[in-house]
Image 1 (cartoon, rainbow, N blue to C red):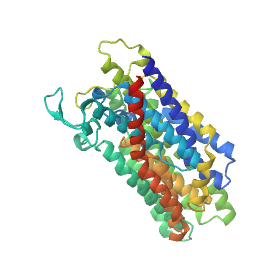
Image 2: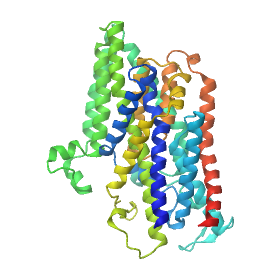
Image 3: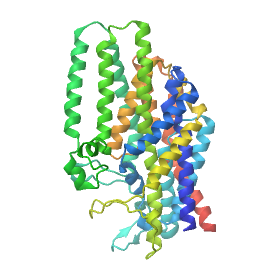
Image 4: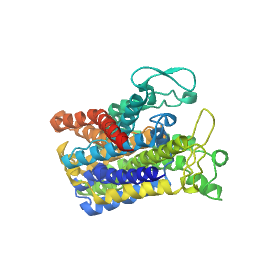
Length: 446
């Protein structure tokens, strides 16, 4: 039990480090454009990091918890993974490199699990409890097909989104920038497009809402009132937010051409508050869940390695299993602690990375800030809906690059960008190797 408590404490410390390491993702553009002072910006971001507690479910947490097969590992594996993730995060923060905290955690968890499998079974095959031959690399959940046409999961999908997340962010920010640029012209075409987009958004979101009967079927409603239960269901809130963001930008596009330069800049600065808040919500919801997943995996491993142990109610964690129909259980203090830790970390700020994100990739104005943060927020909501733990760092970096491309290709400082991409590529393998080494060292003493 002592080791389990140590892992939970270290996981929350990682969550705190994640907050100040990734604070730049949400605040860099509002600081660079002087919409908010640095202190106001971190306070703003931290508030919405914590507010995500009431918005998002636990889909990403479930994906992270199943990075390695919990029936085949021990607590030393998770401890080694968390320690490696903390070390890599602190190093990249010190060097001012906006690497992915998410991929650090995934890489550490997977690397320690592989080291454990090699230590126990070696490189040759072994017969498992199911009577079939297994190999050391199979301890990691590399790929699992989605049920009933749903999105597949596994480490390979997470690796794929190292490329896909920034590409989605770049594409979305590029399209939003083109939309805004055309909306500034006094022609009817962009206004017709905007009105059509508003109608399509309302139609799409209304069809994606979960009715009260389905909420009751899948669990206890948050409120006795049917209306408030539907309005505040995590799934519905996300789509309400998507609609609110798109409709707000659309409303601005309808009046953009009638504003002078001063009025447009003032309006864009106010919209940056909305876009940075939306991105901070996505950051809190996406990244806090990863630590929830690690804590849930640690509890599951503790139960597996101590059969018949009685767990107190505050540690009564059950991982969901789609194959058997088992629903997940997570005590309320775990998400509350995780969201509090990441919000506290964001309050601490990460100024070295703010400089890289806010000015070194491309020069950012209020216009670019709105486009980049809006694109980043929408990308995070989309991937969270698919239960994919993507990197908020990669997403916002891609979004900033996409904005820069609307001016000219040379507006993006590609030397800085290439260095960032190398850091992204190396994060998972380096974290995995580091975690493997930490595992072997810990195994000597524990």
